[in-house]
Structures are given as structure tokens and as C-alpha cells.
Amino acid sequence: MTVAVVLFTSDLRLHDHPPLRAALAAADEVVPLFVRDPGVRAAGFDAPNRAAFLADCLRDLDASLRRRGGRLVVRTGPVVRETGAVAAECGAAEVHMAAGVSGYARRREERLREDLGRCGVALRVHDAVTTAVAAGAVTPAGSDHYAVFTPYFRRWSQEELRGICPAPRTVRVPDAVRGEPLPSREGLSGLSPGLPAGGETRGRERFARWARSRMPAYEEGHDDLAGDATSRLSPYLHFGALSPVELVRRARSRGGPGAEAFVRQLCWRDFHHQVLAARPEASRRDYRTRHDRWRSGDEAAEDVAAWREGRTGYPVVDAAMRQLLHEGWMHNRARLLAASFLTKTLYVDWRVGARHFLDLLVDGDLVNNQLNWQWIAGTGTDSRPNRVLNPVRQGLRYDPSGAYVRRWVPELEDVDGRNVHAPWRLPKERRAALDYPAPLLDLTEGLVRFQHARGLH
Image 1 (cartoon, rainbow, N blue to C red):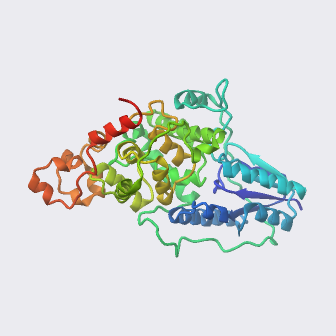
Image 2: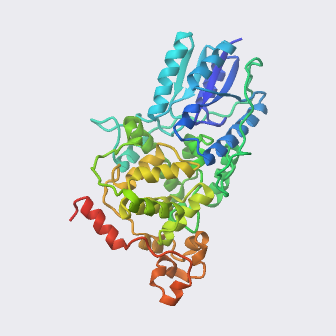
Image 3: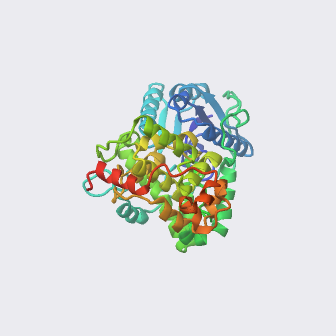
């Protein structure tokens, strides 16, 4: 009886799972394994919202496996040690896993290959599992990655995607391999009240509903803050509960401007993966060094606290930050506005904001979180690094009725229409009746400081 191990990481699904299909083809029995890595906790990446969503994903994966005669084996400890132990317990000849792009993921693969190799076990790493196109598969002449999105998108769009693997009908797991009880979100503290439920089943249901009802209008509606027309699939993509390859193929099969715009967003995700694969240090250091003289000290600390709590005095920024606190998620346009305000109006280091987002975002990861922060901060891949998003103008453009602001900033619920984006312009008596702070600073003052610091005068 031959046995293989499938090490699940950021690919918590059964549909379109190349490592699982390869393992099932190579062996009579398969051990689906997930290792709860203390290294993730030590690095501060097991924030409560993600821990809860992960628990949902693991429970859903286990339930799906049990319907097929299998089960998910969960172990706790260093990934290399636990994977090797499981392979030894079941006499596995191969371990299959999805490729990663972060420095941590690559070191993990190297250590696994070395450790398993000493025991005669082969490590099989599969590309295009967590992305639609493998990182490094599309490169420009003379470089190992694309630094600008548009030419990457053109090349990426020409790539032939691999076929979709169907979910297996049967998974036979060796009886002797021990596992631990599945984690649960019950008992976790610090969760956002509006945190969604995780798991492949929920993710597939959400995509099916959204594709039918909202995808056709996605092109014109995805920036509408109050309309909430985005797919909200980013947490499921982050944990691999949905396959990017399958989403791209299904969207393209529907066709239309909305589907094309959705595919473009999925390409942005792949774009960031190929950047980090080539420059893993960009998760903590400027992709493009600018020698920014970021503000620090007590004054900056007070401003950062106000930003985190959603009391900057700029309603659309405060609405964004309060949505993050409540849902563990934020509309993409709102993320850009909140990040621009911190880095270019308050002129605070992007790493401060990125850390706060990672503490709360259910979809927070080193790839998209860090590189999107760098993009808006002007240290990343943005071709216009000095662009500054004006929160009043952006609010008027993407929340013209003020409905998004009033949803998340109830202090302003009685302020009519567009006036909600600049409450300091209301009559003095009206302003005094609002339980809402004055702006932290004038936008012109922030712009002058930013331009001076970057030598743009």
C-alpha cells in the first residue's frame, strides 16, 4: 500500500487542488496534513480575525474530506518536524505542497526538501495553486519580474492557464496517523463583530451569488463605497479556499466588461506575488528606496492613534477605519484612501499602517498588504509615486450621497448629502452640536509638508 502526504498551507480547498490530485494519482492512500506552525504566531501573523477564519476553513476542509471517506490531520509544531514525523508514521514516499513566494515560504520548502530527502522522501512543489499564473512564469526581457502592472497584465492575459482539477470523489487516509482536535473560533477574543465565516463551501457560495447578481456591473460599480459591489472574496483567496485559476476561467466564460474588470483585479494579485517572489525583502523594506523622513515622536503617535480609531476628522477616512475594526475587512477604495492619508497627509511610515492592517484584516498577508501599502506610499511599484488622494474629493466622487460615511460614522448621520464629507464647513452652531472631531490638520498643510519632504518644491 503506497502513501503520499499533502501538506496544506494557503490552499485550504478540495476543488482545483493540483497537489492533492497528484498525490492521489501517485499513491493508494493520502494524508491531508495541516501543521499549526508556532513560527507564524511568533512572527505576529496569527491575528484573531485570521485565526477564526482559518479555524472555519480547516473545519470545512475536514468535513469535505469526511464526505469522501477521509479526514484532515492537524498537528502543532515546526512544519519541517511535523511533516517529517507524519511521513515516517505512514511510510510516505512523497510529500506534495503548493509553492509559496515569501521568504518564509521558500525557506520552509528548502528545509523540507533537505529534511525529507535525508529520509528518502521526495518533496513535490506545485506552481499555480495560490495564483492563476505562477510567479516567475511571466518575465520581461532583462529582468526577473515586472515592476509595472500594465505590461505585466498584457503578458499575463496571454498565458494559457492550466486546466481545472475536479474535486476528488474518494480520499483514503491511513488509520494509524494521529491528529489533533480541529481548532475553533469559539473562545477566541478580540474578533471583529462583523467577521465573515470562512471555508471553501462559503467561498464557493459567495462567488456563485456575486457572479450572478453583481459581476455584470462590476466595472462601473467596484469603486462605489456605499454600493458595496466588490466580491469580498479576498479572505477566501488569502486562505486558498478558492482557486484563482478557477475564478479567472469562470469569469472569462461569462464574459463582459464586469468579468474583465474582475479578472484584472485577480491579475493585480498575481502581479504582487511575482514582485515579492523576486524581491522578498519588500515585505519589510522599501521596494524603491526614497530616504523618506517619516514623522515620528509623540505628535505622530497621537495622529496614528486617531487614525487607527477612526477619529481623524476626515469622514471617509474615519468610515474606512471603523469598517476595518467592525468587519476585519475594508473596501479596496477605502484602503487606498486610509493608506494615502496616513503616509502622505500625516506622513507616517507605511510599515506602521501595514502592521495595523495585519492586526485586523482577515485577508491580511505579506504579499498584497505590504505591496499595496508600498504602492500607495510611493515606495513601491506605482508609476506616479507622488500622487496624493484628497479624502474630501475622493469621498465626493466615490460616496457622493454620503451613505458610506453615515453607515460607519453615526455622529454624522443627520448631516445631509455631500455636506457629510466636510462637516467643518457647516455653520458654527451646527458643528458644535456634532460629537465629531475637527480635522487633525488642514489638507493643504499636509500636502506642503509632503512635497517639501520629498523635494518636490
